[in-house]
View 1 (spheres, one colour):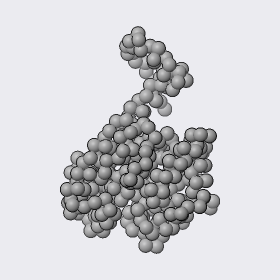
View 2 (cartoon, one colour):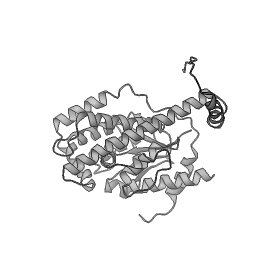
View 3 (cartoon, chains in turn orange, green):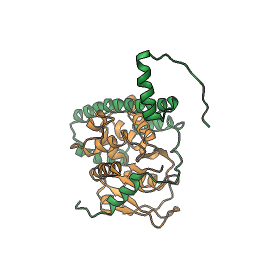
View 4 (tube, chains in turn green, red):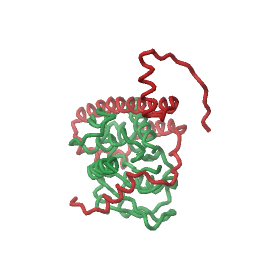
Length: 182
Length: 128
């Protein structure tokens, strides 16, 4: 069955890797809501049962790696960053997601930064189903709320939901509660 | 195409009933199907443990740099706008190591029940 396709932007992933997540620790229980929505976002995919798929791209992974290992910033060791990426990709694959070939030709909203652009190029990928969402910390994208890619084949009745980490976490939790009662 | 082979392993007499019950419950009575599900769960459990380990390292790095999680968007933006050449080269190496990973599985067209519920929730009015 086709899951909800969820691209998580690089800055959200870096934040999620920078704090221990209660959601992951309690696997396979339903992830609890914590005061750290970034970590909760990744936690939501750890126990996913084909409902929400974590989608990444090489560009997003490269951004995550470059940000983690930047000596002027977080200064992660190569082995630790390599391990982190392997874990993220493993979680993505087990959620029915994984790495997609991004759509480089898609037209981007004016003012989209590099992190937002990579997430939007990934969510416009050819080989994903619907619905699709991007989880982002970019205030500009969050204000847009929805985005319809141009410059790639795209169904007119579909839009990409642009969500903050806390909004995605809450929606995923509510959706799971609701459909498990159906 | 999936290929299969038969392997044997020992099950304690006292565990036979447990295996039968769990296979019935999670594999429809098929022990191979049950084993696949059990391996999937154990792999996820392992990933959860490894995630916590990398997060603990990340928490330490963030605290050690004298920053907080609210600084992360700016840190990421700066790392991309004014890249550290070594970090970028190493990140490219990590990406190159992912080339053999499987691509996203083909979607069969039928939506997971979560998809419809998610759509309804998105359409509902929000306050944020």
